[in-house]
Amino acid sequence: MSHYDQCREHSQLSKKLIYIASPFSHPSRWVMKLRWAIVTAIGAKLVNEGIHIFGPITESHAYDEFGVEQSGWEFWREHDLLMIDKCDELWVATMKGWMQSKGVQSEIEYAKKLGKPIHYINIFDYLPELLELI
Image (cartoon, rainbow, N blue to C red):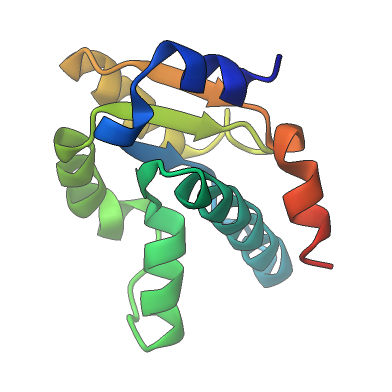
C-alpha cells in the first residue's frame, strides 16, 4: 500500500486542509520548473481525489510568472508559516533536495512545534500522473 493510500485510510482527508511542502529553489531554472511541475501534478491528483490542499510552490510560481520580483524562503516565510497555521497536516514531497531545503526543513520544524501531523510522500507513488506531463 502506498503512503498516500495509508494516509487516506487513516485520516478523514476530505475534512482537512493539507499543506504540501517541497523544495523549489535551485541554481538551475530548469530544475525549478521541474520541481514545480512535479508538486503541481501531485497536488492535482490530491484535489481530484477530494483532498483540500495548499501548495505553496504551485501558488508562488504563478505569482513569479506574473511579476513578483522576490523569491526564496526569506520572502515567502511569513506567508507559508501562516498557511501552516491554517492547515491541519503537513505533507512533504520527498523529491531530491527536500532534506537540504531551508524552506522545507523550516516548515517541518514549525509544523512539529504546532503539533501538526507530518507525512512524507514518495513522489514515485504519483509516477503515472508525472509521466502524463511529458
